[in-house]
Amino acid sequence: MFEALIHYRFMQYALLAGLMSAIVSGIIGVIVIEKKMVMISGGIAHTAYGGVGLAYFIGFEPLIGAFLFSILASLGIGFAKKKEGTYTDILIGLFWPLGMALGVLFISLMPSYPPDITSYLFGSILSVTTLDLILMMVLSILILVVFISLYETWKAYLFDQEFAKISGINTTFLEFFLLILIAMSVVVLLRTTGIIMAIALLVAPAATASLFTNNLKKRMRLAILLGAIFVVIGLTFSYYLDISSGCFIVIVAVLSYFIGLIIQKIELNRKEKKIHE
Amino acid sequence: MNDHIIVKLDHVSFTYKDSLVNDALNDVSIQIMMGEYVALLGPNGGGKTTLLKLISGLIKPTIGEISQRKDLKIGYVPQKSTIDKTFPITVIEAVLMGRIKKGIHPFFHYRETDKNDAIEIMTTLGIDKLKDRPISALSGGEFQKMLIGRALIAKPEILLLDEPTASLDQKSREEIYMLLLKLKEQGMTIILVTHDASSILHSIDHLVFLDQQLLFDGNPKDYNGEVHKHV
Image (cartoon, rainbow over all chains, first blue to last red; front, top):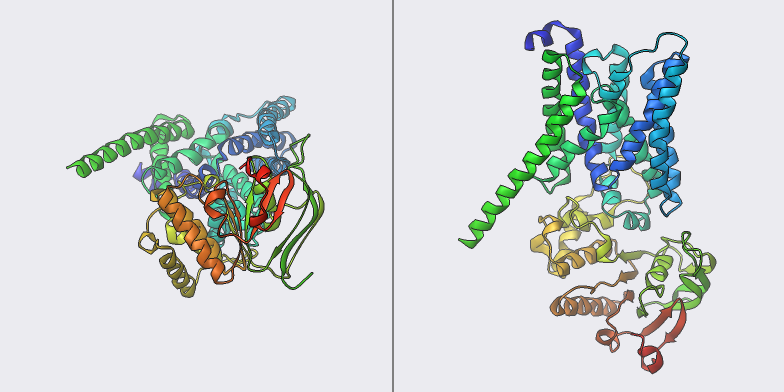
């Protein structure tokens, strides 16, 4: 595979796309877990499918379609959250299938032979184009800059939203901003894991990292590292077996969480024994 | 507004958006004087936390008006149970959050003086040795002190505390009450929501009893026995 990495541009693109996905999901994933926004992220991701369908139908870049739809979904969910009660949950349950339904509809309406869009559903890291890569890079850099530059503010907001509000932080702005960051992350992950499995790369590295460190920065770094490992493993299998990258990434990521749980349990038992001795 | 009045509620009512029937608070008018130690008592669902949130500015009254002294610095200590105890930060990181800069400021960092102040406050609270511990490793009492430390580091003029002694052991409770008395002696205005009426009646200046409406507002010495039955 290393030889391919040196010789083939598609392999270089795939690796770059994978690493960007790992960085973005490491940061945003930790936040998504802490804020218990996993289902919201799932809703935003699936709505993106409508955008992919529309883009194919009208004839523009599918990733841009996905971007527009996921931003709209995140704003919709943001407004619903402001309304209290169970409204958000209902809206997620509606956006999720609506996005998928629109995607199917637009693709079916296409006059020409329908394109193979499984790569958007399940990820196809080996077919990342230059334009995909540029878009992914722009979004990743934006996410990184926004997150790092406002790190302390995000931290205060994530820990205790009410206290942040009393301290004069515009928490409504951050709430919407966070939803938009999730939408952007989903687009970055689209080519790597696909719409259906984007949640896995958001959740699994962050959840696994949460088993081993109680420090927010370290947790994000570990999640990035784990994400990168999962992506490289997924890429390797995808290259040799010619099967979608997303499925291997997801299987490795989810397995690693359970292995992490077992390791954590063993560690805890060992510590307890030490105390008793 | 009189110079000594720090917060004034004028016929304030509040209804939560998702509640169709009851007002959480109905027509409440009270005044809090500077330097007062106030206890908010009342049954669960009586509107104590709602009143505290109204004073803090977290929520706005549905009807009525709240006026505060200009540029009043408020310290808020939320109910411990509402905070995520597994959040991956250390004690000093949590205390420092009281110094977060207002607004959205790219590349904001806490200064060395903020860190020194945090350590000083943690020393006063007796939790300085825990400064690098993850907050998930704290006992209930330690966690509560950390939340108080986070409020105090902002140098508030008024401290609002929502059931700071709930689910704490006797020793930790006493420590918290001692601390509040000390703060009162230093001139801090304190509003405390509590169920623990018997422990504080002798030390407070002003008692407010709420059951959606104001049932008592005045000197604890005049505290009516009938209301007392509710406590």
